[in-house]
Image (cartoon, rainbow, N blue to C red; front, side):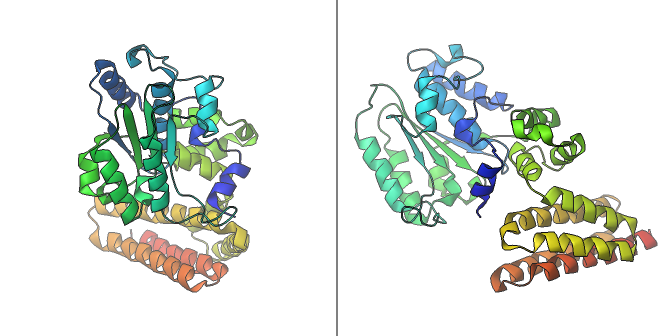
Length: 353
């Protein structure tokens, strides 16, 4: 099962389904001012950490551009385009004649999702832009995510950015803009989005009714570990990885070898099935985050030797994870070995501090 399937099962709203934009007001106001001035740039690069809401922001602004063609965007509805609006509905169904979403597609109907955005999809975008606007107004293209373009696709997009049709606006979503072609970056206005405040992450979670069944402790933990990225908080809340990590962390910090062995076996068993792959990835991220926090604490205290030990742990986990993926090694063994390594280092550090 893919991460996208997991998100759908958990009823996590996709960016095109999000009627509200939480946070990112500075970036929104910058775009509104530009379009209200009549001198808006044709391409915008929306960057930021994974899960921070870049695609949600791009969809929010795209809807405003298409739903309010005849008004200054400074006068556009502050809450954005309502979910009942025809533009919202058409875009959500990818049925708006002046909107194009460039993203990874499947290699054939019902087939695998491609690892990269294929050049044939960029050619389809080129054909879309060769036609006249259906409304006679703006056209909007979202590229989600620009990091997923292969070299041929990137070059095709670059040509479109160099000579854009009139009243066409590009919104490129990027997790790592530094990896894009410099010529693509140079043709865009860069809008870096910042992590949200904890209360804003909570507000995003509150928009998902299925989370009403979650405990406040679980939601607090998801918010605390999200790094200000609501998408990550939602993934954590929808996954069993968070509860399993809390179980493992308690055993790690208790410093009891027997308790750790019991917790490791239970956690490893839960993460062993093939369908738990995404849970395993999230669990590993949480484990690494805990070790990284210990490393940073040691570095701030000026204890280089202790910090180096945590660096070694992080590198060891990375190596084991890479080997497990490539060689399809046993997941139980990976989880138990990683937790035992963290336990040993943490116990030794506590004993010597």
